[in-house]
Image 1 (cartoon, rainbow, N blue to C red):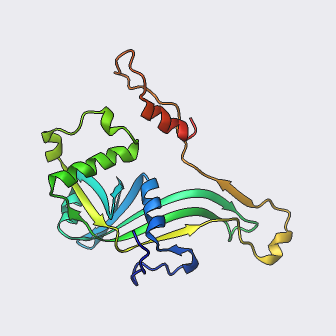
Image 2: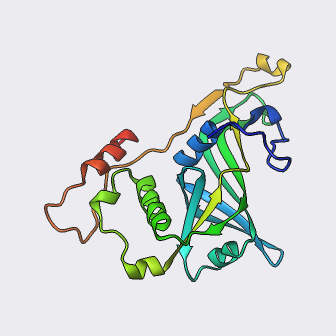
Image 3: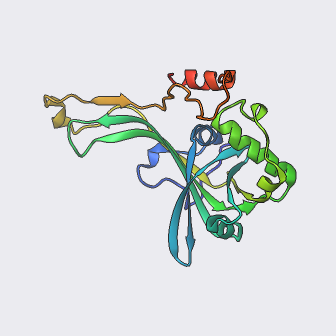
Length: 220
C-alpha cells in the first residue's frame, strides 16, 4: 500500500505529468472499475478479453471457465497486461485538436497465477460478488462443488502498475480563446436504473436493501 517508483515499462511516457504511481490512487481506480481488459499473446497473436475484476489487498483477481483458452494460457505463465479505464467527462475545446476526455486509468503488468488454495479461491469469488453489489454475498446461495470445479481464478500482483489521470477543462491554443465557441466539460458518471425483477421471480419477493441502496446511490 505504499508509493512505489514505476519500472521502465510501466512509467507513463506520453504526457508524463498525468502519471500517478501511489497505491492509494491505483487501488481506488481498480476498486471502482467494474470491467478490466486483460491482454496476452498466444503464438504471437494478441488477444484482449473484457472481464470482471476484484482486488483483495495486493492482488487483483479475474476468473473464467476451466475450458477457457485464456485461463489456460495465463495459468501457464504467459505475460499479461490488465487495464481499466473510468470515463469522467467529455472535454470540449475550441479546436478539434484539443478535444479530450477526463479519465482515470490503470495499467497492471505481470504474470497471472492460478489460485489453488480453497480459502483464497472462496475469498476471491466472494470479492467478485461483492464488487458487483456490496452485501449481495450474504443474500444468495454460494457456489457448490460442481460450480467450483468449473471455475478457475487467476491473480495478478499489484506490484508493477501505473495510473494515468486527466482532470480539468480544455487547454486551447492562446489565439483560440477569442473564438465564439462554447468550451468546457460534460461530466460523465455510471447511472443505475430502477431494479427490474426477473421474469420467474416468485410473487411478493422485493429487492433487498442492498439492491435498493446500490441503485439509489447511483441515481435511481
